Image (tube, rainbow, N blue to C red; front, side, top):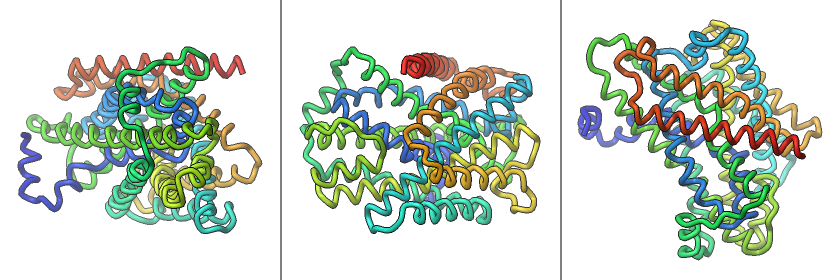
Length: 428
């Protein structure tokens, strides 16, 4: 057991809060309303047939997020700032522009889903509810210091347990489900293959890389610590803490994904509902089949995860832009001291909200977001792997051979997913 863990055992009431942080929040933010829609469609369309994808993605998701977190904590700089040291400035700026665009489309779809979900539960107008969510999210990020905002984000991760509870409220043939998860029978057709690609793309997203690396920097600065590569000794306990935090966060994320697929397979697919275009449509479809309680849990989960995901999406975009242009990039700063950084957060959220009035279908926004994320993900992942294995940049904290291998395999899988995504887009 590491020194960090031993020291925390003396303070049991602070154990969870101190060991879990950026990794937990990042993992939970991956299950945003857009992700819920993807997992719901996977369960509705193919029943238990895609539960195995959750097990497939888990080790690679852990590996690539460990790489991201390690880069941030060891170098004391965010991901964009590190990539700038390897790649041409024009390439980094192009990738950041695509990241911001993809995140904005994703924010738009998430805000719309949250507004619709609240309308389903309490009534009212979708746009009014969406405005409230967009405003609250922006104001919290801009005016609440990170040291106070961070616990709020941790607290919001609890909302994802709604999907575990949802799975427990419906009747599931566990033997059938678990057998399909462990010993799948793939359906060899384009729809099945593309849904596998969609799950992979939803699970491994570029905004998560940028967010977690920058959150490690925020935590470091907030505690008055130095980048690990500047230390002549020690620092191993910090790497251990990152591994625990990230592993727990990513497993938690995939447990929620598993629960959503399980629920929609047991209820929607079992009753012949095989097409779900949004998270709110999944909630609506559950209501007559599984009852009001299951419906409310599912709908409230959409709102909770959206409140967590929107700051992460907007924040990741702001970190990327600010680091690329050399602006101050921290949620610790007051708004007047980091105007550019907070302007990106506000603009991404406001534009995302405004897209809800354009008449653009949420599904189209998610498709565009997926395509842009795919373009960004592979080169960024490749550069991350180069950075984390570079002794000049990482010092004695460069990644182990095992982590490097897992990271490169994950990068290869993502590359194949992007190729498949482009192929499907061109094929219509």
